[in-house]
Image (cartoon, rainbow, N blue to C red):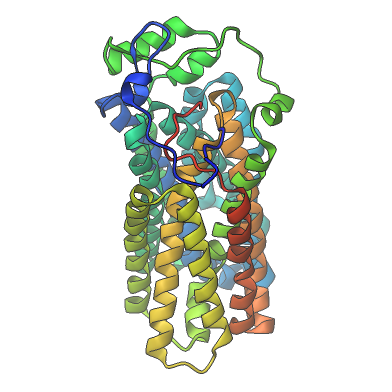
Length: 450
């Protein structure tokens, strides 16, 4: 996606809807109203991200009883918690490329079949490496959701609704994460295998929804299948709508063309900003109980419920900020606030419990709000031919930070203490802030393939 800017850095003017025309003189689907198909695609994408949040959250309730039964060390617990994130890294590198070459629909559907099968397979784990393998496989499947789900939703959604619908994905991730917390709280600790396998239930529901989805018309057009693409647009958007002008010739997608067609600096930044957001998020939220205890806070159900409520509120605040702010301002301000709050928590150790609770709660609110942009920003940065590849790369890059931070977090917490650990965690948003100042593109007011 080409960055739009002028010499003074003033936000680009919104394009006139009448300028967005197709080759045949139809109105671009970027200017269409919401319709049932867009909402169905949104629900199907939201469901996948809900499952992702559930799977990554449920391990927090299962890791303690699993550790007691399997005799896990701190490193073992970190490995199990991080294994799904490692799977996301591997998956993001490959499945986005597969979806760009063979189509969004098939990958989007069969991924849910995998969720159901692997979720149920967790019922039969008998050792540490069995559990690591199952979580790794689930991570591979989650990576597909990041690479394909956001790209598919972006390609179906009209421009003026894109921020809200793509930003809402983050809210459903946290709803899934919090649902896992609630289920884990009421679940019998001795049945941790069934707790892990419970993700098969929402996966089956979403699988049924995805059966009704058509292929992305933008992807079909990029493959030269313009007649099929226009038929889908006419059936679901109306005959007066069409796709933006197609390329004059269809060129086979090659990986080296990805870096020719997309600015290298933007490619790097798409993964780096995500990396810097999720590193502290996954690490702190996965081990939030010992973090709260080391900060001198009661980690009982009421405190945990408060933190989860702040996550939901943060997701709502993030949606509002996406509507209010340009993309650059969003990432710059949220990174800056995260640095300040983590340094405050890590640098001042003798604070009243109420102050710690307020500051930590503010951190939870800001970091969850910041995550709303992860599902909006990367799809806007890449062209249709390589959108799934680009988003998959960004998701993979981000999970390097998440996996590394989650794996090492219990070790640093045990050996260095909570203050030093939080100060180390502040490095992530600091790097993100510096990178955003120089590299963040402004994409809010652009059509997808500008």
